[in-house]
Image 1 (tube, rainbow, N blue to C red):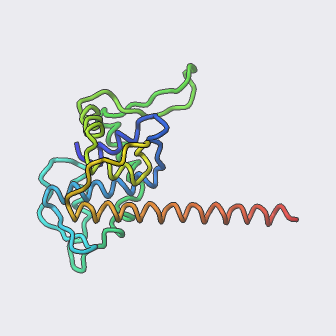
Image 2: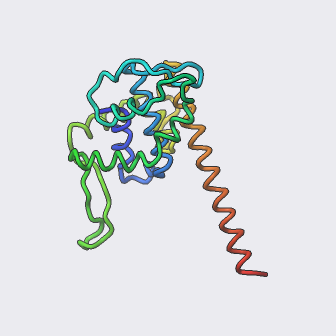
Image 3: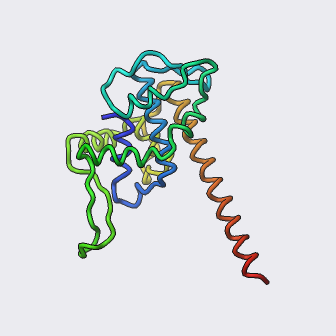
Length: 201
């Protein structure tokens, strides 16, 4: 399992403190993939640019897909641009792949068989591994989860990141999530103003 898959599984936890928007999660998943590619030696970070190296060491379909989509000609792609490009609908992609792999299942909530359907992790070794990383306060997983509001009041004494490239990626994810939130707020204000215009004095 990759950091992105671990992050997605943690995000599927039904507890309210883990609730996260799909857009925010997609950006964080793209960041998690980039961090795994850095760890595998498939890319390096030069300033705010992603410099491709060799192929990823681990055999993971989604990580391989991410590596295949890297810009391999200079000037290389900026981290922020990668997050927006790769992150488009990425949470839906992860959900589909994890369901296909038997890591997620669909369940009806409530007592009625026709109640709303929700997706939740299956109790597999992968889920236990993700939960273990979360309980150990894995620095990378904790940092990405915190960026999208999944910290749930976790203590501030979490271990810090000791890799400059990883820190750069996490900071870029944070900026992208803040930008997305600003867009949401602007659209809400515009929608309210439009509604008031039609409602009249």
